[in-house]
Image 1: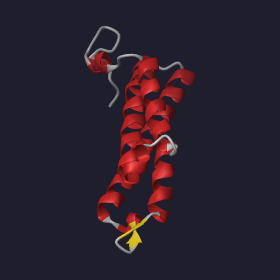
Image 2: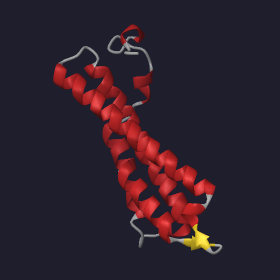
Image 3: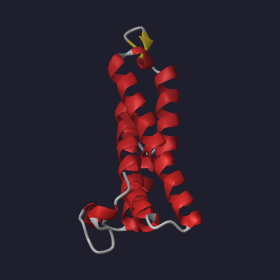
Length: 132
């Protein structure tokens, strides 16, 4: 979801013209696209960490998967919202695919359930066992 929203926003920023130039040439749009790319890379890195931890049966496997469950929906929502921001008014319309990313991001968040509790220390995730 996050990657698709980023790709759609970057493609649109390269095509849409305003004030005689592509909107992708404006610094604010560049920053949004960069933040979206950073989010995608964060989720990708956390996915790799979780997969390796589970595969190797490491002690931090539960922590790594919980971190992924907390991070992925947040980045998906952020990227979907930024994609809509870059698209402007057309992003809210049913004719554009942009609104589908926002719906999918909300579905992902609802499917995974509330993850705010994962940031609190607990017997399952004691602070002493959080990897550096």
